Structures are given as C-alpha cells and as structure tokens.
Length: 199
Image (tube, rainbow, N blue to C red):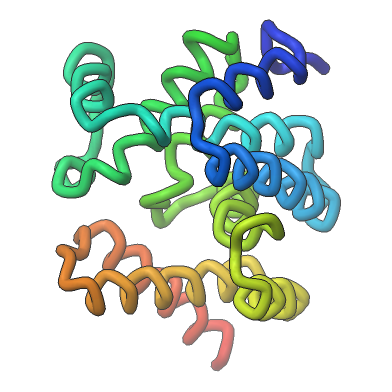
C-alpha cells in the first residue's frame, strides 16, 4: 500500500535539504529501527518505515516557523509550548500530511506523539516512540541494547517505555528544565502497569 504521494527518493531528497546531517542520519536510522520493531510486534512495516522517516521532518525549522504553523493550523498541549524543542512533533505530523500526502491516521498520530507521548498510546505509536530513542545511527549502543533486551521481556513494550521516561525525567532534572505534567502522568501510568503485572 502507498502511504505518501511522493516516492522514497523524493522524501529523502526533501529531508536532506531541510535537516542537518545528524538529523537526516537519525531519521534514516529511526525508519530502519521502526521496521525492525514492526516486524517484531506483527505490525505494518511499510507504515512504520514512513512514520520513522518523517517523524522529525520539522525538527530543524526555526522556533518562529514552528510557532507560526502551530498558531495558524494546530492545537497543542499547553506544556508543549514551554519547550519549543517538542513542537516539531505536531508540526512534523502536519507537514507529513500537507506536503507528503500522508492520510493514514496511525502514521500521523505516531509522528504527532513521538516526543511527549500519551498514556493511551497504541502499539504502533509505542514502537515509533521507541525507534526514535534507540535507532542505531546516532543513539548510544549500550542504551539501545538495554531497551532491546527489555523488549524481549513479558510486557516488554511498556517496560521499555518506562525506562525511556525515566531517562527523560532524569535528563530534564539534570539540566534544570521544567517537566511537563503529561510526562509525569505517563510515567506514573506506566509504573502502575508495571506494579500490577508484578503482583
């Protein structure tokens, strides 16, 4: 099935022109990792590839451009406006739909929530979220291997997400940045799920 109005080479050309080198390589790695996770969890690998490839397509937009697109076309969580670096997620979903012709809601939602996440993420949304964190091109190998091991455990997806949120919160505290209430709520939700499965 075709999920975009332009072909893979044209998408990569656009990304190469609109992302810096590291972000471009990261996007290719996320697409590759998303396919691996889709196969592992029995999901549509082509759909995962597109979501992974486009998840950061607005990452290198200026703060002004991100805010302009949001003000003109989108609604976002209040806490997302506290840190403009999270704004690329909803804008990337918008660009994926507007410029690349993506109409599949599962792809668009996975792109939309790949940074902040939400407590009721689908399995597809979870694998795109994780692929972004553990892709092989720019992410730390030790951390990647740890998450891949966790994914083999019972309830591995939720446990892997919990590990990622722990790392995110730790990083935000270390850098003295505000922690979005949504992030704390998701962490607590995942912790509750773990505690239930442990009993």
